[in-house]
Image 1 (cartoon, rainbow, N blue to C red):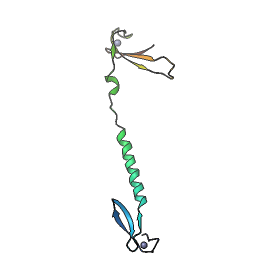
Image 2 (tube, protein in one colour):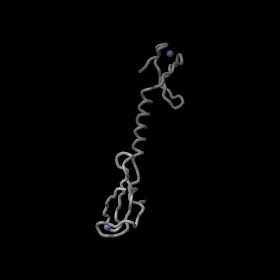
Image 3 (cartoon, protein in one colour):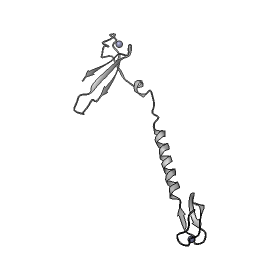
Image 4 (cartoon, rainbow, N blue to C red):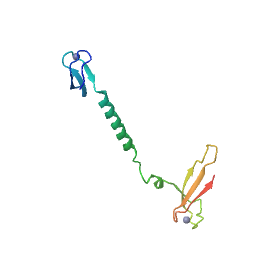
Length: 111
Ligand SMILES: [Zn+2]
Ligand SMILES: [Zn+2]
């Protein structure tokens, strides 16, 4: 229980503009319940985080372009998916990867 710092009367909880405040019925002193507000903002922040986690699962394999300029070292097939990866610093050449569309063998070539 809390008391009014002005007149010593017991403060009674009351709702004001959607927030709970403690109000003195004698002099009109009002004190917002700050501790409750903090708890509410904490839990809503948690909820936001867990919502962001979900990302599309099979996004890597679908949109790869194919090339017929290479020959699979495993099975000799001449069509392969390809993509490039920038390794280490930006001065380094891109590394090109290939994956055979027939046997799924993956290899790389330096540009
Ligand atoms: Zn008062
Ligand atoms: Zn192959």
